[in-house]
Image 1 (cartoon, each protein chain N blue to C red):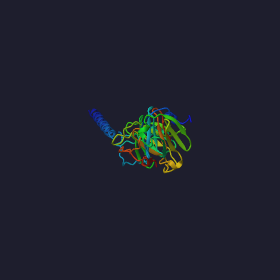
Image 2 (image 1 turned 45 degrees about the vertical axis):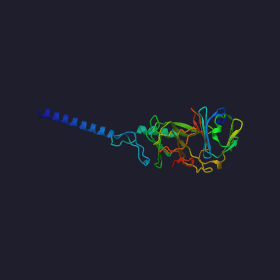
Image 3 (image 1 turned 90 degrees about the horizontal axis):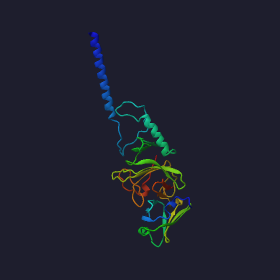
Image 4 (image 1 turned 60 degrees about the horizontal axis):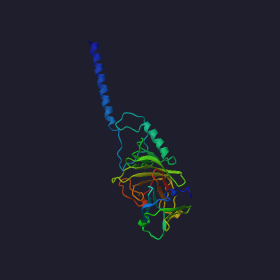
Length: 192
Length: 106
């Protein structure tokens, strides 16, 4: 009788423990999802990638890290200061530079696709066809290679990022958050 | 000259244009668009009234190290200064052609 009672107690305890763990895991997974972009957010680049684990705030998985590195290499192998987040088959939600600046990618944009110079050499990449900014007019994002100073161009030793709308007869430089047009002199965001 | 990316607009009609000093661009009937960021000059019978450019066909394009000249019809020319001092930003010209990579002169 005692043996039966003890066996039953063990079974009940085991079931309760498993149920509790399952509940905790499910609760933790609720924290995983698409990050919301906040213009004031700064990326903590000191964060180390960890193996997948059940935590309330899950770190970037090893698989994501592999894909991230592949996209970085595709985008700009000469500019290691650019890193990307949420790398999946479509465009990421944002791109972070090594100093922690976050650059949003227009929602729904696809890419990266190459940007070339007149000689046909790849000088950047673009995410195109999005609808970013509060007015929904941010269509494209270009991530460009470094350029030297010339004329009124101050030079961009680590490259720059430019956002554009689809205005006719030619696209205009826009603010990535509001979508409002910018003077050409203010439409290039340096990568630092 | 045949290697110039700008050959893509030769023979095509202008659909729309703006030719302000710091805000210039032209769209063409093949869907291409040309944004001009460097200093440029206009020559021809139409002054800087960009709307009079609409309907004109690109008849010639000449690209050299220091300047790009685009001729519309027989009497209108845009000359884009490509010297270092003419840059107002990192980009001189942007050419977009549907289905092809964006081309940036910088």
